[in-house]
Image 1 (cartoon, rainbow, N blue to C red):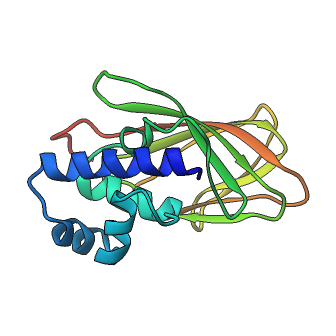
Image 2: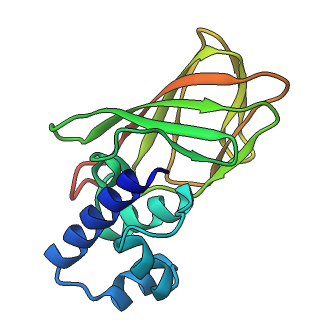
Length: 176
């Protein structure tokens, strides 16, 4: 992530934390992130992983897209690039992402908030995706939907895979 994007993420993260009245220590502990790492991130330094950003968003009780919305470049980690395309304002909250996975990539994703559902459509390439133990293989033009409030994965073989991904968060107070 470039320095401007990192600085923007840090300021936004800090504003969300402060708006909730949380200390740096409270958020770091709840998200399982070292306080020193969170401090560096809020100062626009460091190199946060996608998992770290997801955990922080979950603890702040905001969609991932809300946390990364001010960033215009794709987030890139270990062969996976993710960019927020749009974020809905209705209930339930819906985020839309462009995602690209390099050849021979295995991405394990942590569970999202209870009731979250992901839908993906492969634009090009080959992709295995879904909840761990219940994945499906998809090729260009194929789609799937699955519960994302459990561990899930994305895996490629010899070629890049490009996909459109939507994340639908459960409405506040809804029972999953």
